[in-house]
Image (tube, rainbow, N blue to C red; front, side, top):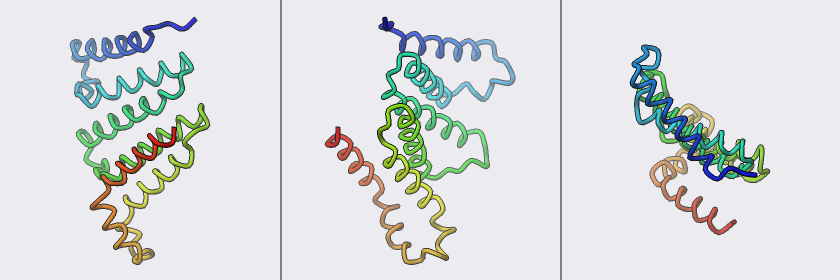
Length: 159
């Protein structure tokens, strides 16, 4: 029998641990008291819920929140962290791939998203070999939100 409120329970446990560590002010965890860490906690809670209740469709949103939280935390606290919008394509692709491991849906979309993110991320370094792609990449970098809109519409139609 499935427990009705297990997602809420995991989120309460995660948020409780987050707030307890914040109140105790343990030096090792000082950098974790931010809203970025809060995204990580919520993502982990959704991922744990997905595995325990075998509702693997939620792996996508859990991984997405976890990945975005890690990325935003890295930008805030580490000077070496890559701060580029193309990382979000890679995170979305990884979320699709992780969900694919259990549902067998979304592998090619995940792979395409990762490759597209890597192409945008390394487009300046690859320009020696792919100078013919420069106008296309420049156009895509300017209008990449349209790609997100089209991806969302595609996902709604596909069901």
